[in-house]
Each structure stands twice: as structure tokens, then as C-alpha cells.
Length: 149
Image (cartoon, rainbow, N blue to C red; front, side, top):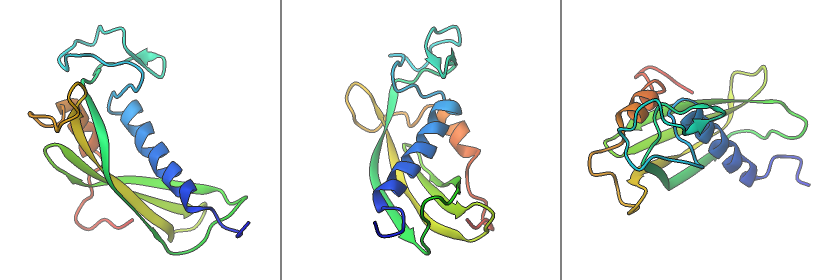
């Protein structure tokens, strides 16, 4: 109606790219999880139809979100999204997502959120921090000092 994407669409885009990475690269499975994070790779838990080598007893809870708008995009624009990690703490991670119009270098929208990794059973921050496999996978998206979205 206003010739641009509604702000709720950006929240869905951010959630989708972050959760896709958590499922495909961090071993998170929203439908099944192990009660013990030390389960072996022979687990029958699956992620995307493949064996999940890291079924998690942890869950990521969103505690903060933001979105900054620089220019409009609208239907039928084709969008590219870039995902990075700005901060990786003991139990938390700060993600940032850039939204680009395909073929253009300038970000139209930048936003993201903070997850705190909690034990599923008690929903409190994980006492030993986030699991190593998750931390390692998130570390691959860590921002280098001279990087810009």
C-alpha cells in the first residue's frame, strides 16, 4: 500500500536468515533436541533430513532487536541478505543482517538481534556458556575489525 516493504517483513527476513544458519550450520533442530549436549553423531536427530551431529539441549532466546532504514525496497525487488556476528559472548551473540537490492552495493536496511543461549529445561542462561559446536559455527561469521556491512 505504501510502495515499500512493511517493517514486519524485515523482522521475518532477519529471523529467517538467522534461524537458517542456526539449523544448517550450528546443528540446531527446532523440532527435536538431545537432553545431553554431549550426544554422539550417531544420534537419530535430524536437521534438514540429515543426521544432526550436534543435537542441542540449549535454546536461543531473543532479548533485543533493532532495524535501521536507509532506503526503501518494494515488490518485485529481489533482495540479497548478508549475515554476520558482531559480538560473541559466553552465553550471548549479537547478529547483524544487511538487506541489499540485488546488484547494488549499498545496504537499504540494517538490523539484527541478540540471542542469549539458555538451558531448555529451565530457560536460564547456560551455566557453562553456549555449546562449543554452536560457538565455533557462530565464530565463522564474526566481524573482522575493518569489515563493513
